[in-house]
Image 1: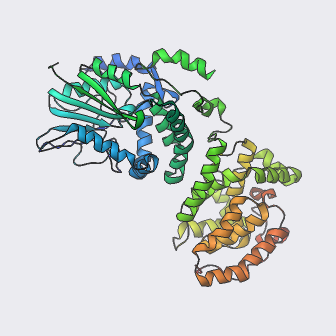
Image 2: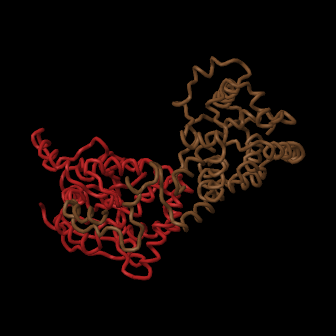
Length: 256
Length: 273
């Protein structure tokens, strides 16, 4: 979650309360949804023509992974400083609340995806995790799922690697529910944040992408439905700071 | 047109939802492709320019190695002055040619081989020597290369963007002409010259605040000898933006200095920091 490393690296350590961080797709690493022989690859290649968003820009799905990778390569060095500056340190409170909600105890097998720098880590793809089924008690992803090209696939993967009874927790920017705050938030996001990025990190564009990608992310209700579509039950969400961020939670109750 | 595009592409989005930009928020379609005034252009609102100017000024003071911040300060505060400079260039025959042809100085456009073959004492050789000394050595001097000049981004006029780019790219030539090294003292002297020459707010601010970090001895020399010399030369010389340097490589350095009314510096600045 916090720490200045290339965010594309993720990790897993199997003992006690284990933390692992997983990255979103790397350039060159293409995820083919039907895994298997080369034949299946050709099928997914037809999807190349599909377009998606990169902030407010439109790009091909092929490109998005690479572009997101570049953003995080660029921001890695000043990641924590920038997070502190932009959120006035509040991002630490949000992450604390996530942990509090999780209530981990010694022995909890935890997978933290897109975790930035952390403990031992493993490199991988959120849309195609290198783990067996039914492995983890808790799957968390904080401020990462927004950047994944195929969110539905990441959710399906989360469902797959969780044990029955396992919990999915996602901390992510969401939609502000208060109209006045929403206007202030927009002004702050679009007028101030890219300037902060330029002055502190010498990088306007990455922070422009950041605030745009937040606007492109589904609302609390829409994301809840997506989580349910991936097979999770008892899906709930909790707004923090009037909806600037939300914690979504879901449980895997049955074996797929 | 951007809205049409979004409407067409919406069904193709990989996931449901995606509200897109809320009303009133600057839509980035303008920042992509057709809306840009030049390739590196980042359109900014007045508020953003104010914040950028303040932020870059603060950061440049805090961390003198953030040359990019000095550049941003120049771009966000220079609009009025750049117009005056551009008009000055238009009125001068050599300046007008520069505006027309838009020469750029970078390692790819410079013919290093040709420069090396020029006679000793020529402007081209002096410039080359300056590059060699300041790129090769690391004796407390800043690494320079024609390519360390970042492209203009925040100027909302493409001709003015070129003018400030040109100003940045001839900065090294001024070092060679004034005989100033790229240590902090040398940079301040050149900034004083540029401040008088161009009137750019960024130059004036750098000239006034740059000396803050100097030792008492350097400061004393600066105030008593170097600044008066730089100011006098800056006033006397015609606008340095009107000199087509790329056409004057063969010209003897002394002759060029004489043409511009630039005299020898009152003392050697190398080794003084």
